[in-house]
Image 1 (cartoon, rainbow, N blue to C red):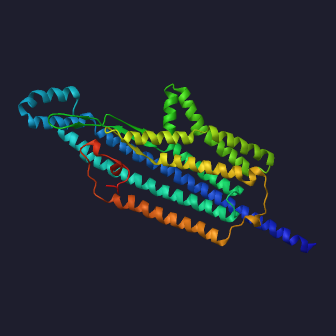
Image 2 (image 1 turned 90 degrees about the vertical axis):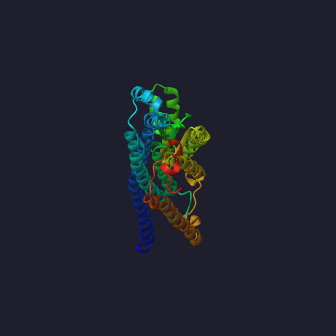
Image 3 (image 1 turned 90 degrees about the horizontal axis):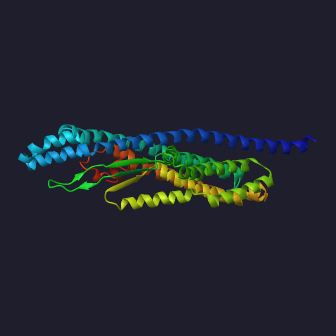
Amino acid sequence: MHSERKPTSGAFSALSARKITLILLVVLYAVGAILAASNIITHSRASTNAIEQILLKYSMQNEGAHALENFDKVHPILGMLVSSPLRHQMELPSTDEADSAIYSDVKHLLKTVRMESSIAAWWSWFLLSFSLFYVITIVTLEGSFTARAVIFSLTCVVFTFFVIGIFAPAMVIWTAPTIPMATGNLEFVLQHEVRGIAAIIWELLTNGHWIIGGFLLLFSIVTPLTKAFLTIVATASHSKTLNFKIGQLLHIIGKWSMADVFVAAVLLALYALKFQEATKSIPCLGLYYFIGYCLLSMSTSELLVRSEIVTGNDKKKSEKKFGLATIAGLFAILFCFILGSGLYTYQQYTVNIKQTIKASGTPLKLNNADLVLPAHK
């Protein structure tokens, strides 16, 4: 009898060890993801706040002070009669104050943008690398792409991307018209906006646009959270009937989800704005993470629908185990991604923080290179 209990005890110990390993990996990823997501959101917002301050410096008052100075140089007699009333009526600062705001203050703010963007980029590199490591490790332990633990790990990554995509800034837009003058063009920032998905929804709801805000809230926040919750329930439940119903419900929700439509609309608006000379736009990390969430969420839902969790097609673990070649290939992909993305982040951000920053005298010369990617000069 003792000899018959040994295999059962050994199998139970192996199963417990595997579960403990999976739980530890989940806890480890949760801690890393929370830390990375909070830093990405914080530093992305700090970067866009500095961008807003830069755009405020290129106001009509500061640019108008320069234009009026040029007018005085070209028309000194007429300038004596016109300059003082115009400065008083338009509340223009002195030329020294305008120079300090545009050249000195903007230069300092550009350094802040680069520094905050660099920190956010490195945290983003850590999160992406850590997420890929987490998923590949779970896939290796389970030996399948459709195992419960794998789908649960993908759901954790999806939720992390979703949080960043919702709360991090998604886009910066500003309008800088050009007014032709005899002494040169007057260029200034007329208006600017920093847009994020959560901020847009909140603004719509607080301004009384309940229908539009409600639909965006439903399809961009409530629906993704519902899908993530149902996926976690399916991975935790062993009821074939419940899991089959969850699979059907996720399939129905997927048809009505507008997340992919929302991203497509944002991208079309983004690139449409770039064709307008007076309007510029910069995509931020929030938009990229929301796109990543959409793609990964659809993939996870498809894996769940086709998995044994929903179909009830039980298979032996031995039939699912990957060979050494597959495992080696997965970790080779992980290594190449970590190395390649790390080198890219270092080259695009860290190296260029030390480069000389020159403040542009006109807002139309500000672009992604100045505000987001300093290496693209």
